Length: 181
Image 1 (cartoon, helix red, strand yellow):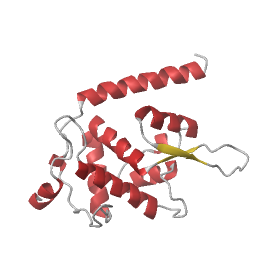
Image 2 (cartoon, helix red, strand yellow; image 1 turned 30 degrees about the vertical axis):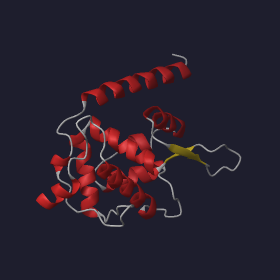
Image 3 (tube, helix red, strand yellow; image 1 turned 90 degrees about the vertical axis):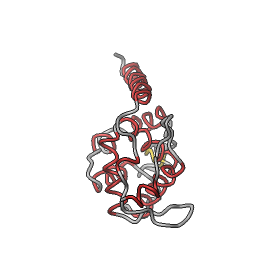
Image 4 (cartoon, helix red, strand yellow; image 1 turned 90 degrees about the horizontal axis):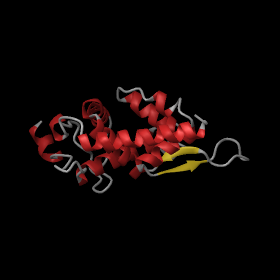
């Protein structure tokens, strides 16, 4: 455990910024999902791959990634600053509309989730590195299988909670305006 703690170090700074080590870990997880999740012919972090990822590591995010409309999910990603692109549907006459996180968008998504609720999200990352060989895309090395809980913040970041609540309020207002409420 001590060797893993020394390897990873603190994964957030005192200012709640992610460290380069956390960035590389999350970037490696994004590439693992892209390369290993089914179908392998889809090289993108589409909603069902995100849902499958969470289910594989003990979570259930189907209400977000499966039940939410593609346009709403894209709006959420945009509002949180999570880089993504829109992919075509099976209908060649429809504009692209399936939101797919880019690896850097996945890093931002996970970073936000970790700051909002580390007690929920750290176990998902711990299970990911325990269960899979996550490769550091810079060095080619596999991350250690043990990811100590104390490398992460002990509690939610209050500034992130305030920011996130403001974004949620903006999303609610935009949704109500679109629906005529």
